[in-house]
Length: 189
Image (cartoon, rainbow, N blue to C red; front, side, top):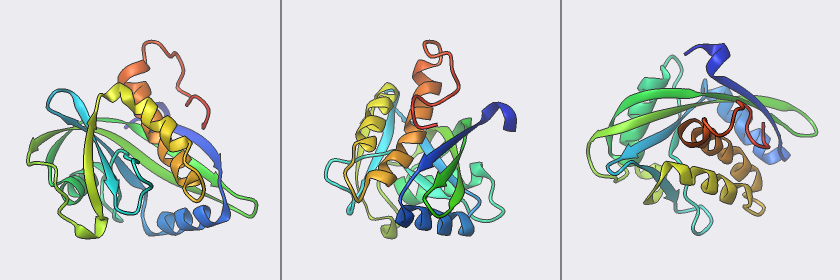
């Protein structure tokens, strides 16, 4: 990955509780992988978890382990969360987001990666993930998913705005690159 070309920076003002959670994750891991898993019929896979607000689906993601490359983390996380074996098609890029509250800030790195499945059916293997459902959408619907995530009420609003970033990023790369001549997210970055 060319760090200058494929790394997008953003800043997001969040509450203290969300910032503390993300600072803890940042201290435990070099970042996360966000999986844009292409399904047959050119749809992408979304997940929901038992504790999410009703009707909320998003791209699956997972924390990288120390010393693990994004491609390795993606294959491991895809297997754990979806039961699918995947092939990395393209590293779409990364988002380094500075999460800020009144008292401090922390950076968090998200690698957004496009894959195609090579085997399996969507079914979580790691019960601790608490995934309860899957949904497939056209890649260009990721913009609408981002909009839904950005509209979540408290206590989910910071989480939703943060998660929306990768959805907007993937949408721009996969669907709007020719019509949007910018590398900046529409409002969050």
